[in-house]
Image 1 (cartoon, rainbow, N blue to C red):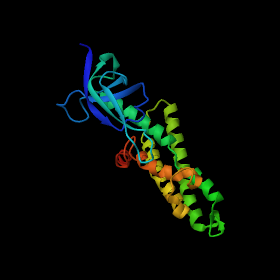
Image 2: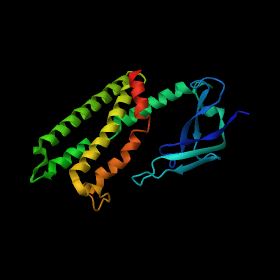
Image 3: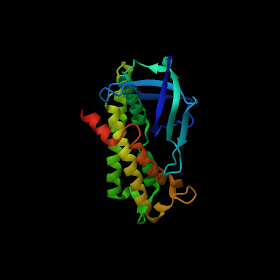
Image 4: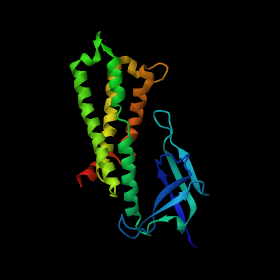
Length: 233
């Protein structure tokens, strides 16, 4: 009839365990090259045959999921774009995803600056230490660059343009930066950095949680390697 029957599995679907709807790219023609033969749909996540399994992360949370599709029926009215044109549709969704991640991902810099402002090293304020100031200055420049790159992207959107590679720059830089910032904060904490419980750790374990979550930022919405390819091309 007018239904499509979907079988397959997807790992790392953000928020699938509380989402009412999802978008799904499928291979509808296996006889053509990779980027051809793809078709995009939206679907009700409560549809029969959809199974969501949350993934336990290193930081104890479950933001991502595995999703299994077993003979899931999707009406053709829920197709997004033309049959076989799913790659073009997915480019739009991916660029917007990278924009939302790149524009909003925390860098950890404001938290680190606040922490260093009240920290004492060897009996003197941490901000008096030339090495600390140098690190903070480097990250301040990066944070400013991210901010203005995001503004550039928003300006393009306001003119009706599709989000471009600037969003890949934002996510690539912010993803590695939050990891570096968290590791530096734990270095400053010394032996106390191994404590991760909010009740025991300095700053309620903020930087420990940041470090455990940071690898995910470098994978979600495109890995560092994918983003570098996009920027280069």
